[in-house]
Amino acid sequence: MPKNITKEKFKTYHSVFDEFTNRTIFKLITEGHFEGLIGPVSMGKEANVFQAKKGNDKVIVKIYRLENADFTNMYNYIKSDPRFMDIKKNRRKVIFAWCQREYRNLLKAREANVKVPTPYTFKNNILVMEFIGNKEAAPKLKDSLPKNPSKFFKDLMSNYKKLYKKAKLIHGDFSQFNVLNHNESPVLIDLSGATSLEDPNCKEYFERDISVITKFFIKLKLNINMDKIIKTIKN
Ligand SMILES: Nc1ncnc2c1ncn2[C@@H]1O[C@H](COP(=O)(O)OP(=O)(O)OP(=O)(O)O)[C@@H](O)[C@H]1O
Ligand SMILES: [Mg+2]
Image (cartoon, rainbow, N blue to C red; front, side):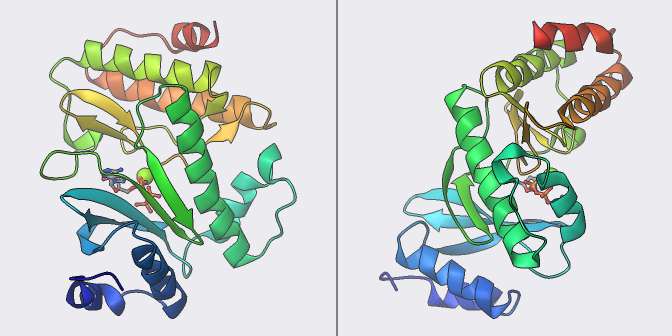
């Protein structure tokens, strides 16, 4: 283990994870991807998200649960993605593929200049990526309404358009829960469900994405039309 870590810090969380996950965390630490988990950012149904220390910086460590993740649901969503066609219905494999898919999607999105956290590495069920925030992790859009909704929405849609046109992906779980408001600019997160435009379900997911976000902004009194937004993104 690298010097001055964090054996103590690690111990704090050791008991939270299964042995397999603990070993993966240790490998990532040994390879120098981070020094130790600082604290939880979010404990969700599919993943636990932690801040971790790396030198003077922080990184985000997203740990997909091996137990009690809804892997049947994950399987149903990933099996139509042409990139993961040959996936077997095996719990661990599906969860690892889900993690790998988020890594690959974030890379593709990044290359297309979409505002997303830069992915650093992944191993098994753990993804390491850029920390979005200042001192604290940036709030979700649903918890931090933009001061200028119209500007924020425009910015958000221009990011979605890059995702669609350049990265050739649709988000798949786009909502006020999966957009961060970072200093009044949107950052898209949670791309594990993002799928290729070749996916036969892509049209349905795309329309659902746009419908959810449009409804949210209509509540913020924006005068927007879903069909128009869809056309703008596709053109
Ligand atoms: N790169 C990041 N920087 C800052 N905060 C993040 C980052 N990634 C995730 N978070 C925080 O962790 C939360 C959960 O992350 P994410 O949406 O990726 O996981 P999830 O799969 O939705 O988990 P679940 O739905 O089970 O909670 C986010 O809502 C956000 O608050
Ligand atoms: Mg999420």
